[in-house]
Amino acid sequence: MSDEIFTVIGATGAMGRPVVKHLLADATLQARVRVVTRDQNSGEARSLAALAPARVEFVEGLASDPAVVQAAVAGAFGVFCNTNFFAAVSVEAEYAEGVAWLEAARSAGVEHFIWSSLDSMGGLSHGRLPCPHFDAKAAVGAYIDRRRADDYMRRGLPGFAGDAWYLEHTSTLVTLPYIENFKGFFRPYPGKLSDGRDGLVWTVPLGDAALPMVALDDIGAFAALIFRDPAWRGRTLPIGSETLTMHQVAEIFTRVTGVPSEYHPMSLEDFSRLPIPFMHDFLHMMRFFREVGLSRDHAHLRDLHPGLRSFETWLRETGWRGETEQVFKSAAEVRA
Image (cartoon, rainbow, N blue to C red; front, side, top):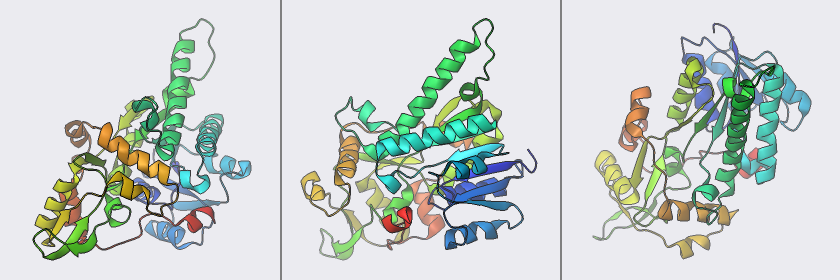
């Protein structure tokens, strides 16, 4: 694979940055990374270029421009694709964008395409709890599954001359909420603990349900792992680091950091009144975790990636002590 081009869609975002870092660091891949960005002079783009100036190149423009899409995939060995639902806030738009990237990569003869997906909350809840920013990515994953099945069936037919590209050249990486969300969306707030002390209070509206999570850097590690091994082509890998209740999160945080904290669960009713854009999406996400839940085979995943982080490991590694930090781009930055 020496000197092959790996295109990363969403490279300047929260997930894309560690994917680029791991591709550049992987001695087996020896990758050149092509970054697709609206502005190659942005701070995020410059920070990626600084990782390996001779091995990072840019395609500048909008993913809605067919010329940009063609330039992004032309001559690429691999493509990692993470689209941003909140750029258009539309299931239909993200689905169309995902399929467009897939078809462009297929036409360009890309050897290995990784789709960054999420679980189908609408499907797993039998339609009760649709969560658009999960379900849009899952819909593209379902499209890939259908095309793989078609490829498999047609490949066995006499006279079939197709390329079976979806079956032989696509992988689906199913991720989860990031551990880094604790710095932002799930962050604790200063408040009074039950014993009267000042501390940090976690208010995520999960009740006693567990939150599945994965560290951003581990997503990058799994992406590089999949690209390294052709056996992952035609397969789907659901990943995750750990599943914890918020009571466990507070206990681990206090033990590791020494900062007193407790979980004071917010009700779903109070949560729904917060001034959060697209609230019904996040409300259904919380209800899904409370009523359905998601599981992962953590032992198997640690066999694949022994460095897989737990929340405790992540805390010790990052030194985070409850400070608020921006994890995602703002809505203005996403749509600029």
